[in-house]
Length: 608
Ligand SMILES: Cc1cc2nc3c(=O)[nH]c(=O)nc-3n(C[C@H](O)[C@H](O)[C@H](O)COP(=O)(O)OP(=O)(O)OC[C@H]3O[C@@H](n4cnc5c(N)ncnc54)[C@H](O)[C@@H]3O)c2cc1C
Image (cartoon, rainbow, N blue to C red; front, top):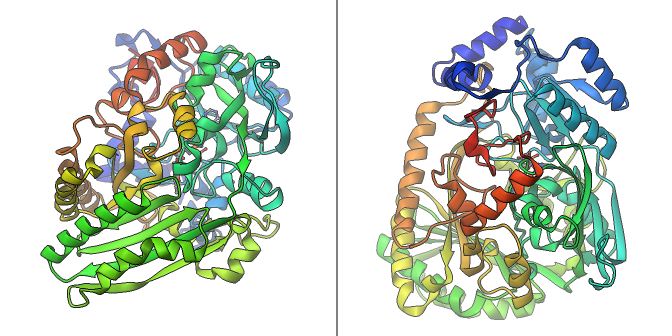
């Protein structure tokens, strides 16, 4: 298949045609340049940089300018070719995806976005490369995209007709015994910390900080998420109920702002920009080149509790939900316990809780009363997966050798020749590798719902929601119940303060297999996708009924969220806008539902 006809086929797919036209030729859909005050340039515009200009940029970045191709270039001649099939197979490996300038970890979202390669990428090796790319984009009026781990659900690290600043190779890691931010000498006590290149993945950080050095750094749950992307969106890991949000651990960042300046920001330098980077959303305020994060003493143990319980009737499921909520409020609502339970339409409760600081016996004692209650009703409640409670030395949490030996089904590793041995991903994340989203809703649930007299209405809402779709509660993504210092540090971020009073984040989401428009056998099914999106929305409506003030956080949320400014940042949004106006007055950095994006067309090319 020739390139032109291959791409044309993508555009002709009826449901995706709208998106394709919208994303690739959106000047018309944005009302056209005549009605706009400012428009960025595309390759079809006369003012697109000349070949000589691109060549000059290439020299300025040490040769690290690359022409970006769709991963499916290999499929243009034949979908059956070995090279095409190899690509399709590898696109289930998150490390392979991360190594492609033209790919993203989600393949798209129905009626929202489809992964599209940039025209060029600066595969930055250092801060100077980033500065050169930022200056080039500003001077030539280009649409810029910044990509680290490529995990954005919202599609904010890809855009057609753009210049990509790709930080993948900037992944150096240095540990400090006594770090003090630049300019904070005398006002800040030295503390243990780690400096991490913006393009590093969390697995690299965990390997260096925990497996090698025996300490803890608060990052995300998914091993392949990018460090800088997660920090800027707040960031929660399995143990955030004890250590707080990942962004709250930020001590200092190096950032290239729209004027091309390299700034070392912290509580003492550019504190407004520093604050904005802590949860204000990635890709809006500048390009972060490295971050320094607080490290903590490692607990002795990390552990997991897994079980699934299926109720034989609706009445028994209602009772089970109520009993679990009472048990959670009484015994698990504290810094030791995080992660997830899911209430399913087939009346199943799935439990996948993680704990820290308890050994196996202590964890078993915590769960005894609840499991005994379940065991008393064997005819009503079936243990479809018998309870398993395991604990391990915390230092082994991300130790691939240990995990392969002791929990072989839980991890996959990057199988490509030369891949670092530490590069694993959790089997539980496999379903999201390459996912094409159908719907995604999230909502913080206030801790007041756990009060005894409120538990019934929460149980009723969870039951009602689970009639439409599976409802998950992520207890580690709400900070009610966390230690005072973790809450205080998280308060000093741009995140919506609702997170501080939430005991959990409810996530209701679904998607299909990787979707590659134009690749037969791998195309999205929009009819099914939209049906599921409707069911997901109805499910969340049941929870919204009992939550007076709704909010969520930017990275795990609905692409179509209407009042996103209030939802993601609450009263902090005006302060974020002030920082945006100061550090990026012309709006060089644009992402969907990012700070200041309401001033732009949905594709970020036209300023209203
Ligand atoms: C499978 C999966 C699991 C996840 N699990 C968790 C979880 O456990 N906890 C959690 O909190 N979140 C989780 N997330 C959400 C994730 O943290 C966010 O999507 C995060 O922003 C991704 O960062 P990234 O660098 O990987 O992605 P990217 O798509 O590269 O970047 C995300 C955003 O940040 C911007 N950005 C990236 N790097 C920079 C930089 N150096 N400077 C400026 N802007 C930058 C991008 O422009 C983009 O807008 C998960 C996502 C996926 C897909």
